[in-house]
Amino acid sequence: MNWEVVMGVEVHAELSTKSKIFCGCTTSFGGQPNTHVCPVCAGMPGVLPRLNKAVVEYAIKLGLTLDCEITRLCRFDRKNYFYPDLPKAYQVSQLYLPICRNGNIEITVGGEKKKIGIREIHMEEDAGKLTHDPQSGTHMDFNRCGVPLLEIVTEPDFRSGEEVLAYLEQLRETLLYLDICDCKMQEGSLRADVNISVRRPGEELGIRTEMKNLNSFKAIGRAIEYETGRQIKTLENGGHITQETRRWDDEKGESYSMRSKENAQDYRYFPEPDLLPIKIDDRWIEGIRSDLPELAHQKRERYMRDYALSEYETSVLTGHKSISDLFEDLSNQTGEPTESAHLITGVIMQLMNSTATLPEDLNIDSKKLSYLVSLVVAGKINRGAYKDAIEAVFTDDTDPEKYIADNGLMMVSDDRIVSETVDIVLADNADAVSDYHSGKDRAFGFLIGQVMKRMGGSGNPNIAREILRDRLG
Ligand code: ADP
Ligand code: MG
Ligand code: ZN
Image (tube, rainbow, N blue to C red):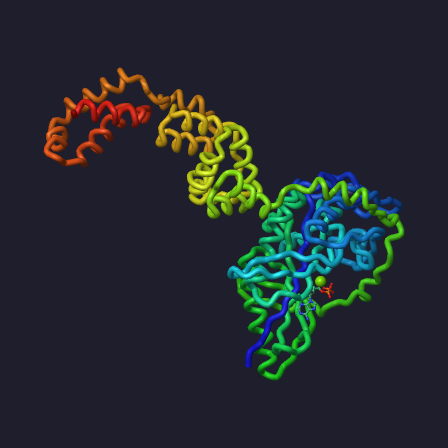
């Protein structure tokens, strides 16, 4: 008999606001341990939190994009528990009145579109970080305490691992385009917990386990497969599933029980007395709505319409915000959208692949690229020189003007110089000339190659071709 897997996902997204949610400390990643802290985020007694308005605005941005209802009067609640990474012994979060509710997001799997329900989005603060060292013990770093988070909770709408991954991709793209989270899974700024249960089709929801410590898309796919198999095997052997939190060990490729699942009442939630409720009115919401940036799917439509780019090019260009930003900078600076698109989907993508550069780490000066695009379009450098110069800018941030000058790549369109070179090549290659005259067309390509080689990449191939054809009669 077949089984159906049912999943719901909770994502924690660290917001890219400059300062923390309740104090002025920086949110920047890294730094010496305990240097991004103050009495508020370190949980000293007698201090009061002050809400960072940008956090509320980021939450509303995401909520509007995901079609949520925005809670007009929302509030923070305390979630109480003791753990050494939480100096206050409570996390300020939202239980009763989360800022966004009842939204949805569309995913595409195998060409089929599906809507996933967004149950809620709430604001909360991150905890610190513990590192365990067998020799010196456990070290506490509170730099991350108070970094703002949005927790995005879906309905149990997923029926396969592919759907979960498509959702995470879609959500990531949205967060990046809204520019509210850098989504670096390896730095923990995007973290996903997957709740999994299995059932016979038509039955009620089964008992779920929650999978934690999923640090990459690949780990998520593997963990889902493992956990689904484990649950099915347990049930088929007459056992039962315990509601629990399980930790995924990606190296071993298995998960193990961390703790039995806690319920809301275990946390003694109560309204946060140190912060006033937040009143959100229509004007505020509409102001944010009118400021929402263009999202990936809107860009795709616009690129195809305005620039007549192919579907493939369009999808590469909008695959990551850093790529579409580069494309738009380039085409605005050069007025050459087609050439700019070809450059990015061609040479730049090849360079990124061969150097394993992630889009979020792409750091290339669009002004330098623009200069080169303008030269090649104006016929002032040839394609070979263009490619080499792009590579130099990509790898060493070279000054392209100097690079072109130093390597003598500015195309020689001066007929006299090209024709002198052609004469030399003809004199040196009498065999090829007679091959050409006896009808071997390939000899022409060889001769052109010799002319270009002699000109060190600065020859104008069109002019060279013309003169050579002329000379050969
Ligand atoms: P908690 O906040 O205690 O983890 P919630 O009831 O808010 O629990 O659900 C958390 C996530 O688990 C949600 O994404 C929800 O869709 C999902 N979920 C709830 N019940 C199940 C179930 N039986 N099987 C799979 N996922 C579930
Ligand atoms: Mg949970
Ligand atoms: Zn602080």
